[in-house]
Structure formats: C-alpha cells, structure tokens
Length: 230
Image (cartoon, rainbow, N blue to C red; front, side, top):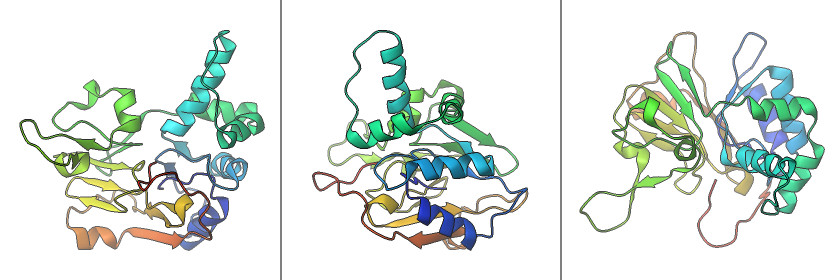
C-alpha cells in the first residue's frame, strides 16, 4: 500500500475494493500518518488488520522527537500535524512505530519493500536506514543535468516496492515499483495486490493489472513550493 498519510476514508475504500479479508497480509510502505485528516484512524486500521509497517521518514520524525525528549535533549519542534499524531498515540501505536523495520523481504514474491528506495549497485545488507527512508534520485557520475530516479537505475532481483516520492506519480521501472500517488495531495491511493506466491511482472502492462487505486476525496495537504514530496 502506498503512502496513506492519515487518509483513513481512502484506505478503507481501497481495502473494500480489493476485498481485503482475514488471512490476507497488508504491508504499508511507510508514512501512514501526518498531513491527512485521520492519522489516528489509520493507526487503528493498522492494528485491526495486523498490518506490517515499513518505517517511513514521518514515523521516524515522530520517534526521534520522542526519544530526544526522553533523553533530556531539545529536539527540533514538530509541525502541528506531527505533534497532533504524537499526542494521540497509544502505547500500542508507539510499539508499532518502534518495531517497524526499515525493509521487509517477501522472498515468495521476489519483492523487497522499503519506504523510499535503495542505492543502485549496493548490496542490500549495505544499505543504510537513512537512505531507505529518504532517497529519491541518484546522480550519474561524470554527467551533468537532472538526477535520475533511483528506481530507473535499480537492477534486480529483487523487485523493490516503495513509496515516499509523490512528485513523479506512479513509478513502473523494470525492477522497482513506486506506489506513492499522492493521495494526501488530492491524487490517488494505490496498492499492488499479489496472490499467493505471485511474482511482480517486469512488463508494465502486466504489472498494471495488479494495481488497484482510488481517488482522494479532497486535497488534504497543499505543500509549499511546486514540488510535492513524501
């Protein structure tokens, strides 16, 4: 599931559309809270479904703020929507954040899930958490011009499923699929739905058949500047 950002109504509608039921596995690519209207409700759905949350930069921001305060430090102040989430979280919610992995391996599907991405050419066990939560692009050594989306340079296996970068929209690279389609910005909420043991097709047309999405009900958050970020 792509970045939900507190869009509970859209999440519920998408789960209904894919006929999600007990026995199914729901994996969030991260950033399930903040900016949208109902982060608390999204957390409730995560608990009810037993979902796996891959840690995003927004979860990390809230965790770091709490931990720095507990250590007697002065953390950077949270934005109002991050503070609202932090103040509403229950001990179970904090546990979900604390135990959220930076990556999740699904070998039966040939899939590796991260929030933002990976550095092409670097082994999985050498990737840093900060990279996995924040990377968007990579530069071509010795070349000028705009950087390249990291997914376009990733050569699997595994096939990487990620979110974080809403600006390009749906990303369908040969070995990477980006699911952040900007729901909180008035775009869509998108899921990749795989059957038992099903692999992700490299062919774009076949992969599109596995994607399910619904439109946002509103523009819930309008970022400053022209570029939309995760």
